[in-house]
Length: 547
Image (cartoon, rainbow, N blue to C red; front, side, top):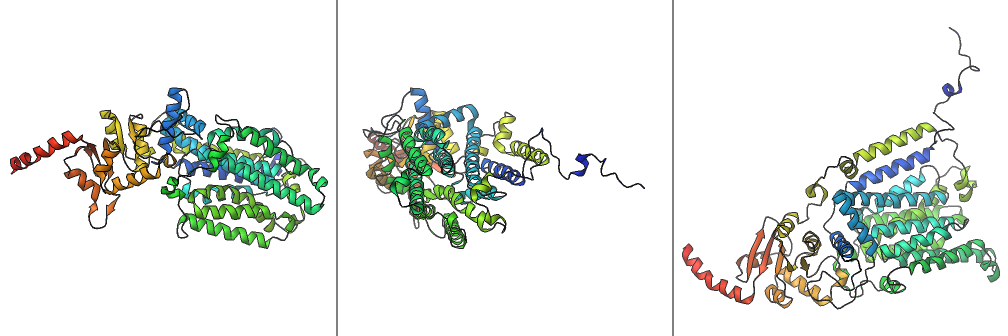
């Protein structure tokens, strides 16, 4: 048997992996990043539409599209409103409505998965640009999703703000060396300010990073002229200036900054669970504490102190305190934590030979293990993900999955369908997470007393709303606010001894007429005083007839 001729053996047979100069090659880290993004997309696409303020935002979007203008007061309030309203997220509301109009519920779920995946991808890119190579960008993307788990399934305009903050962090990773973020970052801020009012957080992060660059330049040379002449400081200062100017490109101009700073000034948003203080025994508390401990461990263990930027940890500390005060702030912690900690963890756990290489050199170094075979495998992963994700599978097959499979189980689908079928119109009170969906389903014919936009309610109205649903003087308060319908949940507002007080009162009161009820709810119409008096007069006769 002859030995193989090494000199005459084709090169392609001597390689373990397929490579080609005519086909894109993918490194191990790149393949890991693609797999992580596909996993994130598939995971988030499994979420259903929650009965939250999502439907209220979609109602605003539909109102803006149909009227061709922005509302100046709350157009859906049960009572006449004179307090001006700044539509701080009008563009996201319009986009959300258009997505629903074109793709239905699956379109909204797909948009949610795309935005979460885009935010994760930008964070991964920013972490890579900060020097973390190999599998570390994929770790950063997965860490973002894990830390966001308590609020990951909620669809609201804040999703656009997550993407905006990810762009800011990418710019902060590039500005120490490059000036190109100065040209594209203002476009991000011009969009962000019309998509969500949290633009002030993006400017704040830019400001803190700029302060850190100034301090670093001062440590190198304590000369004010030398600091102002530092290229990185100049780029950061210019980026803040152009981003602040771009943020004024909204229907309300600089007034939007005041709205962002004073949001929730009435205190009514504290009635929402996401705006309440965090408890350590909750999932949010566990994730926050665990990630904070890990960040502290990485910070004190790293030997390359020049890689440690204390202003970044100070920003993490502030966001951590803010999350303890309001659960909803977790999303900003989840975005910033990987950007700060993962590059340091990559340095801490890197090989000894790599520790002598600066993060900038690592970021710029080309990969040597890129192969075309990984590209083919990555294409297969993407294909399987797209055909497996429920919303893309549904849209590709042009098959509507229906409300039951695309909405959370707590959504009041049946009673809202009955309201739409009867074409009921008027003012009503209901649990806030139901009120938004009834508002949407009735095409704004039903006007809620209080709904998911808590910041539009007054403290007095919120107090009366709670009393009505608890069964405390409910009829007098309903007549006071001229409410025509009451939608009560059988499972909520239960007295430990008396059970569902409002439900029992509605079933026996002569002042209401039961329109619809099932095992989850009761919908009653509040009768005018004359009709309720006539009904009470008929009650004894009906009782004697039954006897």
